[in-house]
Length: 132
Image (cartoon, rainbow, N blue to C red; front, side, top):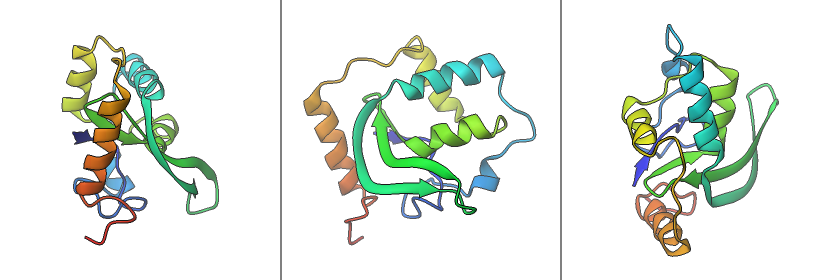
């Protein structure tokens, strides 16, 4: 399992999470590529969610604290929000290659595989219920 788009403000225990300002680039990705990446992320399989609603620091609503997957990568719903809000938000090159290799289409993933991903997420110590 791999992770993409995690921000320390919301997921401080997620190794690899970054502060939002550190995710902003001088230039934005090609808008066409950005749009197909957003479409890909939007079509992800629901993995799990917490009973909470996320907001910007100024109170602007972001969305539910939900997580999605394509069977390999896991991403938070807020990543989509920030990709739409900030056209210069970075997109990991390895993730872009992965999406290209999937021909920009979310593959089918069994319920069993999604349950295994959810368990792995918890084992990685990222869960809010984790004592790590």
